[in-house]
Structure formats: structure tokens, C-alpha cells
Image (cartoon, each protein chain N blue to C red):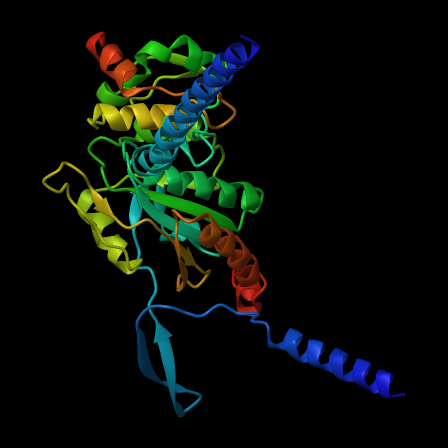
Length: 137
Length: 215
């Protein structure tokens, strides 16, 4: 009996461990791929440290802004952004160009951005991006 | 005693290295030999390429000509405010140059817009404000497209009209010009290391005897 219980617990631990590990692997894959997408599509404007540029280009370091806008970040990347926004207690109203990259690339780059520059929001999956893109205004 | 000798030799080596460090920058661009008569003697001198005269308008709507840069060392670049590619990087790096020399009245930065149709004077002023630059250290220059494209060539830069993808083509270089309006250096404006070198080179240039003497 005791052996059976121990066996079940051990099996559970192995399963949890394995699933954690695959989450970790998935995160790393998204994150490292995302850093390349970031360099190619975002870094010129937003900077290598996500610092932005003065009052022209907003920084990507405002975790609260990113959290509050989590569901529309994919739309920002795909369709661009116009109009006034407040980031890091500052107002920005210049235009960000649309960048029609694949949903998987959006997922990767958002995973990178939301887990770099002092942000820590976990993996943004392809499924999430596809769902979010359906609700773009 | 032997140790002392080794010490002296090492010291001498160090000093030899020191005196080898460069204290002047090269002069770039085309050179033409010019024969002149000086004091009744024929002298052949080298004439270096210089920036020709020009007339543009800055972000304050002031007319800027080559005369406004007389007696000044300056850095030039080409950009446009809606540039999605390399311009933000260039001007993020140029801000470091601006911060370093903004209190020096014998130094200027000029950025020519290559999209004068969109980048009107008010647009340039707004960009300057948002970039966080004030005063007269850094001028954003508006002019006829032909004039801008023509002067770009003097700075060894190539700029061109929109390509089929709707983008302007331009080099991302920062060009260092001395008080005699000669080209003294070109730096990749998108590379922070090159821009750090530019700042060091400006200091070297400022210390050259014929720069100190020039008015």
C-alpha cells in the first residue's frame, strides 16, 4: 500500500516536472526567437534596452501599461498605433507604423518584450495572439 | 642594479608608445594640387575638398548659411522625422554628442531633412522639442530637395527619393567638419561605439593648433 502511494506521488512529480520543463522550453524558444524579431522590427525605435527616445518614442519598460494592455499588444504590433497614449507617466502621440508580421512572430516578440526591460509576464502563446487579433478594433 | 635597468627600459618603452598617439585627424575627400605664387616663388600646395556655400532654414525659421558655421566645428547628418528605420537610432546616439558639447558655442550639429515636403519648419520644431533639444547647438535644416540632395554629395553621402516600397534611401553617417569646412571623419551613426569615437575625435580636433587659431 505504502509503496503504491509513494509510486503514485513519484509518478505525479515526474509528470509535473516534465510539464514544467516543457513550459520552460517553450518559453525559452519564444523568448530567444523574439529577441531576433525585436532586433529586426522594433529595436531601431524602441532601443536595445527598451528605453524609447525622449518624448518621441515610448519606452517598453512600463510594466503596468503592458499589463493593462496585454490583450491589445498584438493589435498594436500588427496594425500600428495612433493617437495619445500615456506610458511611464508621459504622453506620447506620434504614430507607430503597422508591421504585418506572422502571428507566431508577434507571439515571440511579445514574449520577449514582456519578459525583458524589467517586465515579467510569462509566455505569450500563438493561441493567445490569434485570439487577441480577432478582437482588434 | 639590473632590476633598475629593466625598470628604466620599460619606462622608456612606455614613453615611446605615448609619443606615438595621434594628435590630429586625417583630412578626407578629394585633394587637388594647386600651384600658387607666394612671395615671387612658385609653391605647390594641396587643396582639400570643402563644403560649398548653402542656404537652408532651421527649426526656428531662421536662415542658415555656411556663414553661420564660420569658426565652428560641426557634425552633419541626413534624416527625416517619419523615418521608421535608422533615424531614431541615429538621433538617440546624436543626443550623446549634443549633451557632450551643448555648452560650446563653437560647435554645431546640423541635420538635413531629406523629406522637405512633410518636414516643414513647424514639424521640425515639434520634433526638436520632443527630442528634447533646445537652443542653437543642434539645427534641423529644411531646404529645397535638390539643394539638400546636392549638398549631401559634398558630405560623401548618398540620399535618394522614395524607392518603390515608399521609403527614402539614405546613409546613416555622421560627418565631422572642421573650421576650414574640410571633412575630418565619417562615423556610422547607428553604432554607439562609432559615436563614442566621434565624441573623442571632436575633442582631438578642437585641440589641433589650426583649429584653435581659426576664427
